[in-house]
Amino acid sequence: MIRDANVYDIPRINELGVLLNENFKRLFIINDMLQDDISKVIVYEKDDKVVGFIIATALYETCDILSIVVDPEYRRQGIGTNLIGYLISDLGEVLKLVTLEVATKNKEALALYDKFGFEVVHTREHYYNGDDAYLMARKSE
Ligand SMILES: CC(C)(COP(=O)(O)OP(=O)(O)OC[C@H]1O[C@@H](n2cnc3c(N)ncnc32)[C@H](O)[C@@H]1OP(=O)(O)O)[C@@H](O)C(=O)NCCC(=O)NCCS
Image (cartoon, rainbow, N blue to C red; front, side, top):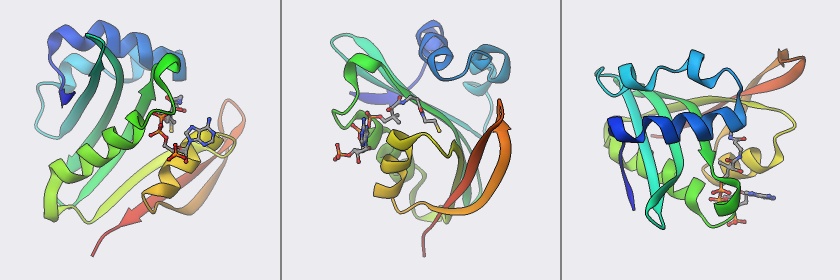
């Protein structure tokens, strides 16, 4: 089941977020994101637990995906696809541009973004602990 997150999901979101970025809890204050008007915090629940999440900021016709993580035990089951699909359809027709950043060596994430038609618009060199990152964008008409 996919749904908007609530305050009870915060510890689990942080636990998953740290798998991707050890500074996750410092970078993203989920409690604040749940309360402001521009953040989207969406979780995927399976087997009675949260097994994935996506966080983004959405402002008018643009949306920036800040992070997406799926529990390693539940990867390759379409959950990442569902999270991005839900976010995009939730934002509706007003949405014209989605952006994100991803390490150039993150093949799994790049394959996922490719499925949704994201394109590389810029390369940031030495961005993540010395690794390069792509700035990607997906435009809709
Ligand atoms: C990236 C991530 C969110 C994908 O989640 P997921 O639930 O496994 O994704 P899906 O099952 O929806 O897979 C979507 C597509 O991505 C690609 N993909 C995902 N994992 C892959 C892998 N291990 N090898 C090759 N392609 C892969 C495939 O094209 C797949 O589509 P398919 O199964 O129809 O072939 C997950 O791997 C993850 O949490 N990674 C660690 C965190 C991370 O790197 N987040 C992105 C930060 S920018």
